Length: 185
Image 1 (tube, rainbow, N blue to C red):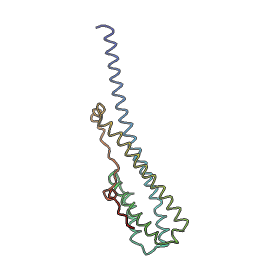
Image 2: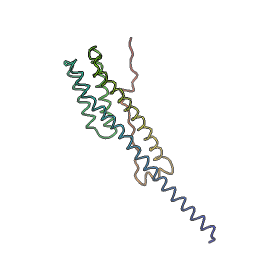
Image 3: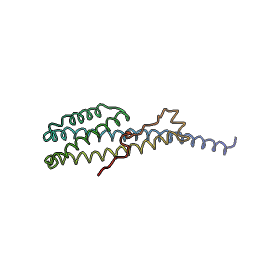
């Protein structure tokens, strides 16, 4: 064998090994990004869950006869805290969002409550947190898309299967939130 052929074979082997290492490391990096972005959703959900008891107590002072609304918010909050996994947390989070909408609807009936500075601050913080949750969900889904693409594209799909990189699940909105709202004047 000539020296040129040996050099070409060595370079080809180095290139193939480098490509394998690069593909594997990219899959690991993307999987870790998916996990990190999911934990960012959990951080914002925790923040919201910490705000809710204060909000409920503030509203209770003005609307003590709205017991069912408070119970629904408390139950939904508990479901979010106890949920695990993308699908379960997504469903519990959507239930809590609906319960909070009911709580704010109750608050609309009490002008003194709406004027209360503590309520306004809590409502503002909760609105800010909802925006952060929305952004975190969007970011998570963007990272999941990149990860799933790499897991399914050739040649990285071979490594994904070989090293058991599973397809990640998207954070999805429930069917009820996809319906067109009815607006009446």
